[in-house]
Length: 414
Image (cartoon, rainbow, N blue to C red):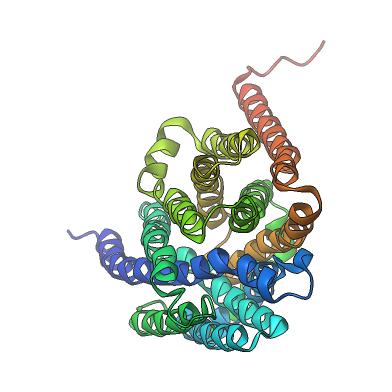
């Protein structure tokens, strides 16, 4: 007798694997677009902004776009399907490149901020790639699908900074203007790849099905997952946003900052190949704690010196910490909702994460301009300490609950 359930799961996983290949390629291309913004945004901002303290505002606008785009992405995906959201997102990515190039050529700081905001909308859609990889997949394959799509970011780390390196001086004296034009072309290529993704169609019943959002997000598991993401990602972004400009202020070259950013992005996504195995062996809380601890180590390295190797080591360790903290939090979110609830829950989770990132991103420029690179690194420690404390409390509560479950039932008093 044939096990129809097993057969269906094999068929669904075959489709999921094909989707993962396309989504991983799109992750690489989209990551390259964001790498261009992070590698150049603060430098361009310092050049054309009305005041140097506004230098990181373009990158902050990118993060605001990330936060602003998460809930609309969920709504569009729920009503029209993820593929429609993907096409809209890549369209925003193409506009980012075109407007960014025009803004640099004409010295328009605020238009450049609009361009990076659109880049954030593109990034918000791209954040759903990792969740889309799990759609229709079996429970066993879902964590691997998420990790493999995130691993596509390795190629973003190689492609994005090199794209800047190859193109930044082509339209002299307008540094990076041609880089943004190439970025637009990369977004169009991503659009073509995503057009072939085969994802389940949203059912009409799913628009109103499932539990109220408040009931879902009040679950302890969701709270833990969201907290991990809301610490790991914003802390990483705070340091990464300031690093290229801090390197320039220390007399280092654009090539130095491109090299550091390149290996930072590789470190962000490279551990995805084995994160799942580490979690299976040591448990999710231990891996998340390791990620937060690595972000603290990165800050210590940043405080220890101002040479190029110090910046490079800071960015590499920071990227590894982000992977252990954030990627596992994403997989935990998948365990908190049903298929009908997935789009609204995933979008709300990302809204929380990127809302926190926006706050940190706006403060990074002021910290760097007014207090220096050391202050940026010092700010890392309080949220990391909070995250580790919450993880310790959660681990203690879980052990205590397990202990109570195995205690023998005491007889009633006479």
